[in-house]
Length: 512
Image (tube, rainbow, N blue to C red; front, top):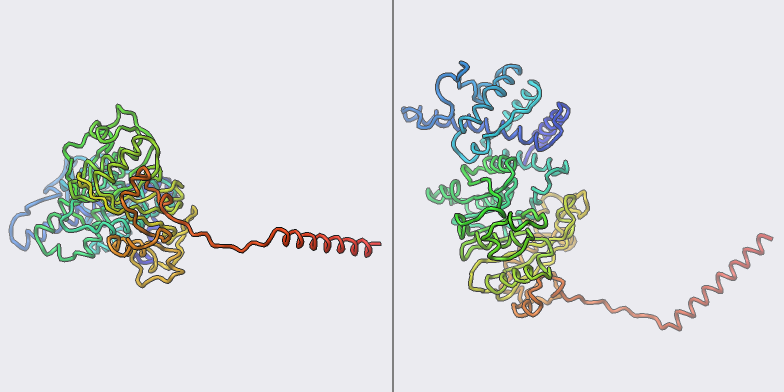
């Protein structure tokens, strides 16, 4: 958790950027991201220096070269630990004229992060603002993964609060629920084909640290975690930079975060590569056939992006791989041939595990569209037996544009610190959904369709044209109400009319 002091420091920096002439929160976060990356380079270089000194050998990997650059400036001056002590004017000159060109031209440390710094631009307007930001970031304990991760999440939250680029930010509690329900393992290869700020990948990494802490004691498992487990695509270079830094600050050394237009480029190199897909893709309506990857059209012939993304997930998953993805409700009951065929494929050719209907305001204020989470496993040989449905009515936050928490922080999300009461459950369904998901092959199959969650046999789903909307199967019990006989109601109306007339007559007498 961030302390109130760090939060107030970040708020002060945000306000300083605003008053300094940078009003776009994305640009603010970009500039802070560059500075965090520069500090990360210095920390890595310092670590290599310490190793060389301890082993009494030359440095195996230098990030900052020895000697001086083309204008005679020592490369050591480009290091965070050196320029942070400069006077503001000199710091401004060094960072703007030497450090940023170094980032663009030298390629940093060769990691995925450095690849996204090639077009880094320095736009901080004044030496005073730069000195203030550097001082604040220097006081953040970067050796503490939780602190620096929370720091970045807090800044991402400020982007969402500003109402810009909210489409890149799935609510964190929904991400945590999806990760918990898919339960990543140390051997998984995880992909988000619309990664944005890498919220799903970060949450998966945090889940593994919490549930499988011993994986870091095994050399091969640790190497897989840092270099082979996490993969993200995006076609926005700003998002790639921000997502990469988000992963770095959450302790993943070298994830595969790269540029790719998921719906326009073929996927032969990534076919059946991943064992887990977690995603909330942007659903932009329709694409032209000319701009759509032919390998996706071979799965489902459509221009609808939501269906093309589902085809993409099926192509990327290896047999036995599983997925948890957010879809607009239209995917569940759309009547077009492509909609029906895709749902038929999920039920008959793959294994559809569950459908969680989300509250209509989950993605407010950015979108009011109703959504659901689909859980499925790629088998290429069927396997759907019973489909588990959950009708989520509350996620712990108000469903209006303000999205205010309805409970104390320790009672929000899928893991409250103590069991929720019935009244608290009515405000946060996430823990119940997670518990009942684990029981979908046992006690959940015995629950009536009047309950909040229940299972539906595959035959029933097929009989309904593979409609996956929960309202198609949910049974509503109407409370019986005793109604009065019409003659009794008329008698009461006549009595009321008589009383009104008597009252009017009495009033007229008093006025005379």
